Amino acid sequence: MARPSPYSPEFREEAVQLALKSSKPIAHVARELEMNSETLRTWVRQ
Image (cartoon, rainbow, N blue to C red; front, top):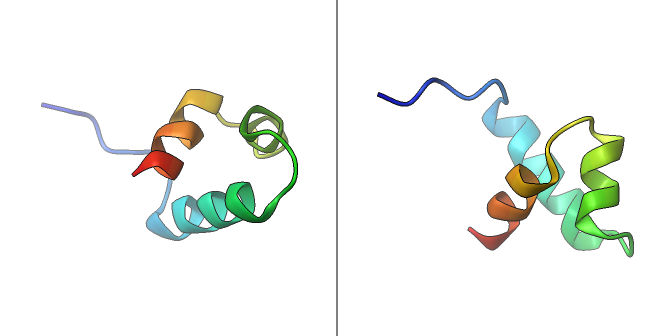
């Protein structure tokens, strides 16, 4: 069974929108949000 996400749906949506609207690389946005870059990259792909 997968463990629950430490991120709220609201945080997830805001992070994806920030990554899409920013001219910065996803890794840089993720670092600013103090989260794993692969997690953010996966969210953006979805």
